[in-house]
Image 1 (cartoon, rainbow, N blue to C red):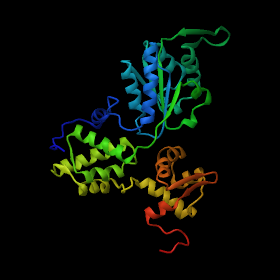
Image 2 (tube, one colour):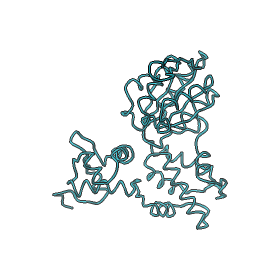
Image 3 (cartoon, rainbow, N blue to C red):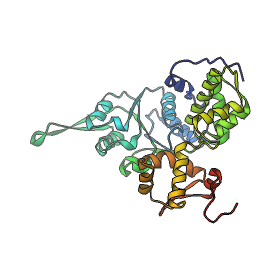
Length: 333
């Protein structure tokens, strides 16, 4: 690849925006999701209608937000962005809905963190484009109904199971994003490296891709740290040695496991004989919120075959022992 000219400057937020795909051709992976989305979008265009409401589910960093922006761009529609935690009371969502323009996309990130009152306001808005407001209190209270323009609600969540059934049922389509293949991650790193003006040996790309947890956001984070290390050391092209050094500095191993991942596995092995152990007990042993364990730690460990969830609890699998170079009880090397 080309000369290491570090063409993008500024804070990480600016860099992240530059690396975000802004066209369908740049969005690598999730082929089934893209194929279905294109059918839905094309049908809505031919009918000159607002598209159905969409729900994107899956672990963090897989491209849910990017998909929301690409959908809006397909319709040349503005995007209004908010998040579940930011919507504290019914008036918050009512203010957003009443200011929507026709055809606009409303994107709600972390939708599982909305309270039920917000969901109930959204039910008629999604179904019949009506906003029901209660004006006043006590006996003098009355219901005011406002008509809303055609709009598309796009919600993203890492915990689909925490959304209520009535809320989920009001989406026209639900898409579950999956972890990316190694080839897709390498393609993403190559694209990002070109944008950043960083030269990479193929071996370095292979190393970073393997450690990226099959997640584009993490792949780009590792790429940026390798770029930093390259720049500080005055090296024009990132090679395998530099890629390994980057991972070493970040305390990430060659499969992408970070200190908290290894600690989780080792606690189950050392304190609970490899499991099974219940999530509440495990959270107490780790001094960690169980939601963080379920949302952040477990999905990738399960995808590697290192951890298994069962009705009895969490169980460390043989592949994890092998990776950590730990003997199982009764095993002889």
